[in-house]
Length: 618
Image (cartoon, rainbow, N blue to C red; front, side, top):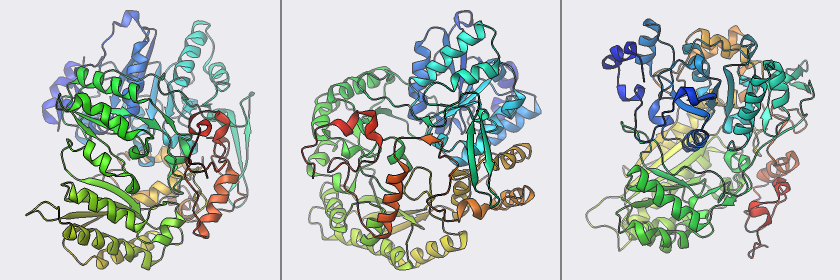
């Protein structure tokens, strides 16, 4: 439990419930029975971290092992951080209240590049040296995983071990190796060398990087027998993979305060900007029976009355109508809402609509991503305007009157005409509502158009593409704003400044480690929050370190350049990504994985959709 010193400051901070623990289903263990302590750190505030499914899964899984105690740690908000520094209170685990220095492993999930400063700041608040070389003992092993681990290089000097791919097996294998080496009084270096031999483990200290005169990478050289390529880990049978039967139930409101059931991993679609769609290939589904059982257990053990069926594209679940039919057998009677986030424009059918009528009609969300058909073909969205309008018509006739449409601006080959087409498409959705004879009487339509800025990401066909400059993005944002002529459309857009920094770190290399170190010394944190982010401060820091940000964000790379993440293998071949990039410039599309196998490379896992019998194969 938290200390008396913490108790004294709780009334001085916003939302003290963030810092006290003690929630329903949180795990408390007797320290005398524990052999390994794992601090699972989420580099953002409690409300964000408690909404993250990956943390829920691994927290529960680790704690099923009797001798492992996994505790949660979140980044304290500014007010709490200031008081902790003032009162000399180190960062602590939420379950025990013990300082993080007492833990064997300190694990971070990397969901977003702008959380990197929080990773280092949390180590600093814990009074743990931020650089790996300054932690020579076999304790406080700092590990990290999640989607941003696909390019680990900007954090290479700080993290001892990166987990590449899915963590359910590899994390525990590394913990077991740690127990063995600690019992044998082996050194940290010996442990890291041995860990590097486990599939899915990347130890950056065992790789030497050389650069060309133009700043590009010349070579990655493994040392101490480390593998030249680090291959991701993958859970192939989701019916057998661990899934919690309860979640920690927060005592304050969080972002997504509901039960969450993962129904499949991966995505069949291949949108050329979407990193997750390539990182998590191939598609692997849970059975209807498994999903049904897990949903019922979660509702029973948490008291939640809403279950969100989670995936990258929920309507792409191959047995979605059968699944919803099965869930409705008990959810209606028990007054549990079933929600399907991440709906495809071409996946919202009358069948699906009739099955989710119990969900509160707060609005439906679709992501056309681009306004013109040409640009949707460039990004391989494989969605057509008439499909979107028909889908909206179906929803309006079913009682919905709010629709959110997500788009990107700054996509490769985009013109100002493409940007204006976003406004035109929003207007067509508004018109569709007023033409629908079954729309809700007396209720006006509300269409929200949200436009984020394109960020080129590793392991996508657009990883070689330049990001638009900030002035170019600002011009496009204003052009879209001027193109909207009705008050029925609400326009939201993300600040170009944060998207620019995101691009710098998404495609960065080890030269950015120096910037990160100085940023930590200068108190940079919460860069994903407007309250704390300052591009001017960052640009001064880059200048101080001699870093040209345009080199990372706004430069087109050649296909033969050695990229900072080329020693990481997520299965999708570089040749496939190059071919997809070339097809984008021809506005040529690629069929989804259920229609035709495109030989992207992930078939080597010999599982999931890659070996299913695809009756619709063309």
